Length: 103
Image 1 (cartoon, rainbow, N blue to C red):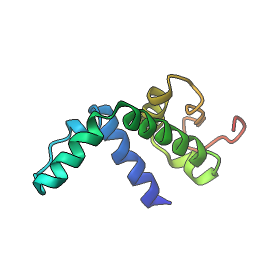
Image 2: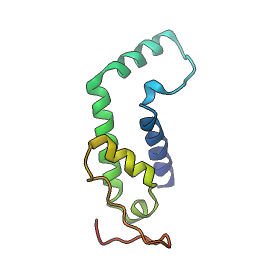
Image 3: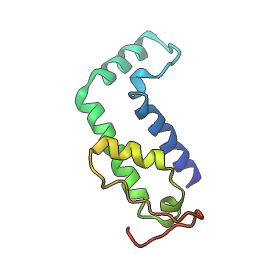
């Protein structure tokens, strides 16, 4: 589960910086650069990736471990992807204990 949390953190950072198209990366090959360019310019594909990210964050919050450990930045990124507050349901107390009442 910690690996999934890390992957969500990385995806959230990518989204906050404008998505993979805006990330600095090394050139792998001309073929890959063309494929990546086409994917990055495909609005439908980009919207689908954002929607699936938000759905993944929402689904993870059905599990108590994820609910208690998912970072606020990940939840905020998911909320930004959908424009709704559905993904933002992570209640906590000030001591770091996780409340479960609002799942």
